[in-house]
Image (tube, rainbow over all chains, first blue to last red; front, side):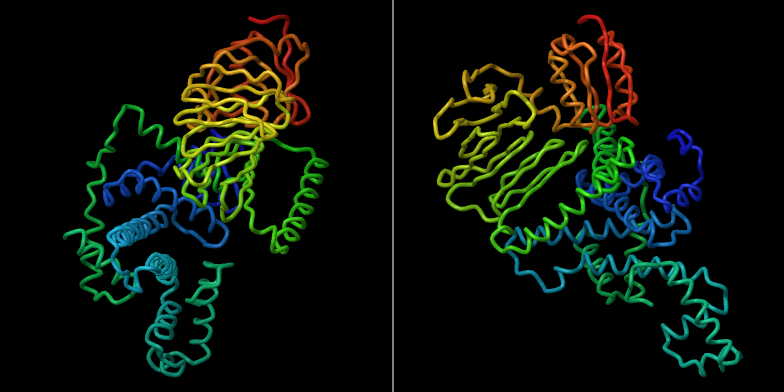
Length: 187
Length: 318
């Protein structure tokens, strides 16, 4: 495919191309979103260099995960990614200032960025859960978030335990597909 | 909300200790973005374009594989073999404790990179160049270079900073300078942007350079020549520009070969001495650059071997 043809593709089509490793699709995504991402980054940090770094982080993240994450809606993914990149930039800036001021760093300040990254993936996966069919979503939420037993869920939803297990398997499969290669804390 | 409040909310949010109310406040703060009304504070008119450009360059270097040319399948096989062998060598080297005290940074064609040295100095490494240095500097901050690099050296009078490149030794205490010393070039150059730079060979001093001076040394180290240079032109590559300031076509071809990872040949060797003024952005694709060069020089070009070899032909300089 010629480079100019990529400009006419929809976001969904670009995502497909990206998953198959087309760097031209990646460049087109960059061309489409860089200005918006940069503006968001700058607005929140009021720092040009930080804004550039944020755009970089979001896009490098997209490229690195192109095969691992099943991204459904590009714009939604980027919106979440840039929000977390902004949070991380703010956390990073704070840590730098505290270090410069010679302040003793609280234990938490060190891995805040890592924790934010984990929350980003978690939030992204939650989005995947929300898109599950009603029954599967309910079963998954009861099991994982409220830690109900299969029997309890069966009683609550008026289903047989076998059906609960079926929906649970379905939810897990969707999530596994969403993370494919990366092993996460979540599943 | 004050900055401090935002920072605290982000910390709580990351640690999952924020109450639902706090999460809502943080998200409200984030979403309240009149993004369209946030202008990029440019110091000059095309700054934003430069930002767009610079980010793309960085992304290309960091993500997209540097494959500007298609290789023959046998070339690919050869490349793979080299890769496997060098990986094996690397494993061997790394597993030897004494070797791991050195760091080697190598750029392929079309790649620029900045390297932070243990003493706080910074090196910009041009395409097709290799830099080697000790993980922990001793009395002398010793480095080896093959190719082209720009050095911004942190001042430390008690630890001289010394770069060895094709036999040329450059010693400084704290300055900015560039060295161009490719193995397949007939001359090596050292150019100074700030401070004082001592250049020697085999322990013998060749020159002490001050800003805007360039030393040219040939292979045998005979007849070193000092000339005044335009320092902006010397470091143009570092700013994303392929700049040729009255350079002979043979030099231009070498730069293009290194940047695009191709081979450039001349049908008529007298063409190599023709001098030209031209400048290109480093992101210009080769297929766009070649017609421009043909237009400027009045030469014809032919692309062969699946874009690997480019032959320039013409009658005389123009």
